[in-house]
Amino acid sequence: MHKLLTSAVALSMLISASLATAQSYPTKTVRVVVPFPPVGAADLLARTLGQKLTEATGQQFIIDNRPGAGGNIGAEQVAAATPDGYLRSARRGRANSTSHRRATARCRTSSKKC
Image 1 (cartoon, helix red, strand yellow):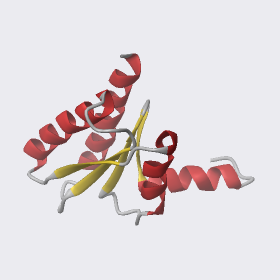
Image 2 (cartoon, one colour):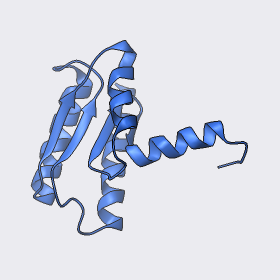
Image 3 (cartoon, rainbow, N blue to C red):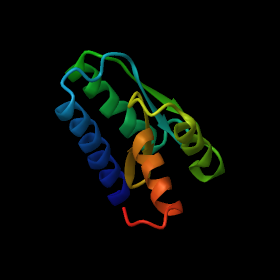
Image 4 (cartoon, rainbow, N blue to C red):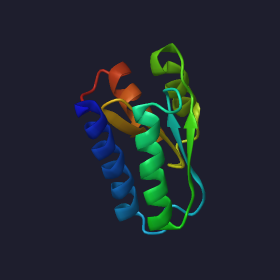
């Protein structure tokens, strides 16, 4: 239950931060990849938040379940996407955008501190 609550807070903070920095965001449909099967806790949470965000922003938030390999299938799809902010990932304990995931990967392979 604690992880579910943490995921909800992280996802809402991530979307709120995006909305605060760019008032015109979103201008098109946002897809949220949930790397777990449908009808699970993560799916229900993402769908509930997606519905509320759709009502708040006027743009549709589509929940896309990509289960398998411990969440790696969904994570790989998000990592390979264009970092434009319209493909999000809802993972256990955190919610990430494509640009954040790529920046994190660069930090891990770089000798510099990030």
